[in-house]
Length: 306
Image 1 (tube, one colour):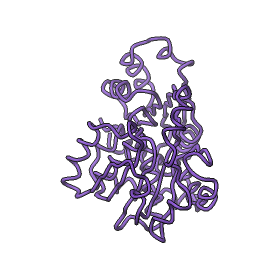
Image 2 (cartoon, rainbow, N blue to C red):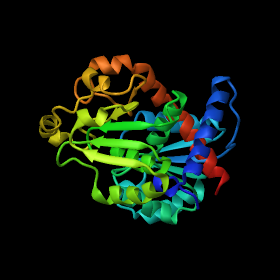
Image 3 (cartoon, rainbow, N blue to C red):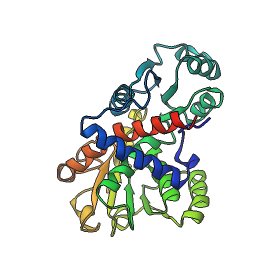
Image 4 (cartoon, one colour):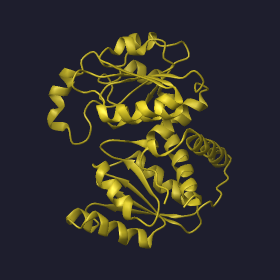
């Protein structure tokens, strides 16, 4: 059974096939053509964390593909009341054609997928956010920056930073990750990426210097410093992340054709300055829209490769 749990599970050729499929589907959508790639198929969408882009893009996406989306929060199903993950997976996968999960645990996601009889998609976990990175790479391709790509990720070494490292190791581009001391990407993830990088010739550097990390990059990206569930740490994090805001000075260290990406929600004058956000708002909202198109491609790919 083919799932989409992490980019580590896919080869560069497979990832590029999905990107190409997304471009095709997006072009059709923009022309008002809605091909029913998944007629009468049902996508179960399990959310234990709130969402804007993930819910809207998956629910709209499956509808445009000819199917139906079924929204299930932790308050709606027995999983939220302690039913074993495996039992929930067996039941839901016996009644639906595909499942998307957005939750707090990569381990629980993998437990769920292990016994599922249908494809499972990672809509976000504590460790990875692969659908977002596919949308980001689609955006990079649309702006013509995929050749000689050099990316700087500035900020928390969270699920986004880990996913950037995973994508770089598979696609073979250069990535600088700049995080404050104590907030770096975990060693086990970097060790896994290092194995892939030996094949792809990617170069991944982790540093605590955001200014140096930004030099000559053609993509600079960041994420919120305070993710859901970290609200009690907010004041400490705001102090620890001083100097890591992506501002005009930092963007000026990048290449002339550089773009800025943000997975949203964005907190102006914290992780990104208001000036930078407003300058690159078109790119950022192109990136957000691409969640719809890339996830449609992922669903179609999984449906065809069951």
